[in-house]
Image (cartoon, rainbow, N blue to C red; front, top):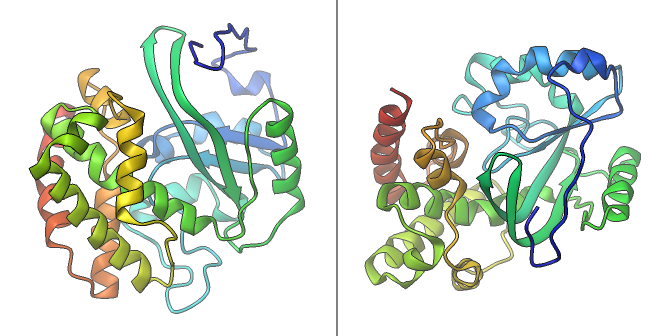
Amino acid sequence: MLSPRGDFTAHAHATDDPAEIGPVDYVFLGLKANSYAACGPLIEPLLHDTTAVIAAQNGIPWWYFHRHGGPHDGHRIESVDPDGAVSAVLAPERAVGCVVYAATELEGPGVVRHLEGTRFSIGEPDRSVSRRCLAFSEAMVAGGLKCPVEPELRGDIWVKLLGNISFNPISALARATMRQMCLHGGTRRVIETMMAETLAVAEALGCEVGVSIERRLAGAERVGDHRTSTLQDLERGKPLELDVLLAAVVELAEITGVQVPTLRTVHAISDLLALGSAA
């Protein structure tokens, strides 16, 4: 790990056979969301009756409406859980949400460059402050990380999504870094519009996002010449994780009646890019 906090080498106990590990109390899932439906063989040997699955993903999670309350309680979002394929592998009852505030880049095999951020916010879908969340948080903090337990984690999801829904697809389409997108006037205005439409969807779902668009843009600009994970995936010929970022919010706009013309446009173009990169 290369980091402004100090470089270090970690000698992890690793295996490609989870059966060698057996059942555990927590599974910390670092896969991209488009791999969830196929991860059953990796996950099943690790589960006992009360194993929690902590999915460190961007975008709208498959468990979003699990114990949400209100008119959409239990609703399945097709773009992130097609035909229930993800829920069949990762039962929503096991889910602990996680929003990652860390910017990193994979520089080579086994070499990660950490640019900024050490916070991993977690929370229960039902907004409770559970024993399993508190125990996991204590372990993360003991390891030198920030891990607040947030009863209203969905608010954190939308704050992070404000950036991901705009910067990630545009960075892939323009091959641009965070700083370049923020400093280009026309692109910045498109991003501001995408963020405004995203906020409207969040508010229609009863989620107040406590951050302004300008503040979100300022934070992104401070990251500097960082290439988003979507751009990194494109450059490496990997599938693009755009369904949970863009398609999901467009789908949520449909069920709430919110107009999101710019999100729809960028989604259509970036979806074509994703199809081409997967070919």
